[in-house]
Length: 100
Image 1 (tube, rainbow, N blue to C red):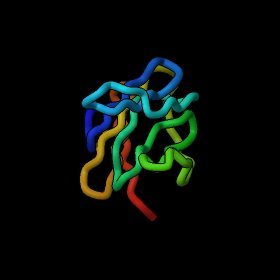
Image 2: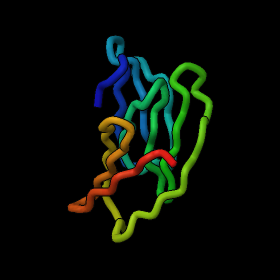
Image 3: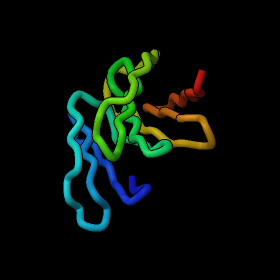
């Protein structure tokens, strides 16, 4: 996925965030389930039981929100953003997450 001048990809155990023009690695986030999605200067990544946001400038953890993924046992969790909603997909399951 490429957005906001960055790209992210999933290695099977980590999300790698790279500068899209130079392909220089900017962050490696271990323990994730898929690539990230950019939301307002942050990258949100799916963890086993969370959605976790990191600031793209400081690379600091901003927040981690618990989520349930009923039926997820293996395979990547893909994220997309539409408006203020983050959409997760694994297998044939789609889940929407909105700010509280």
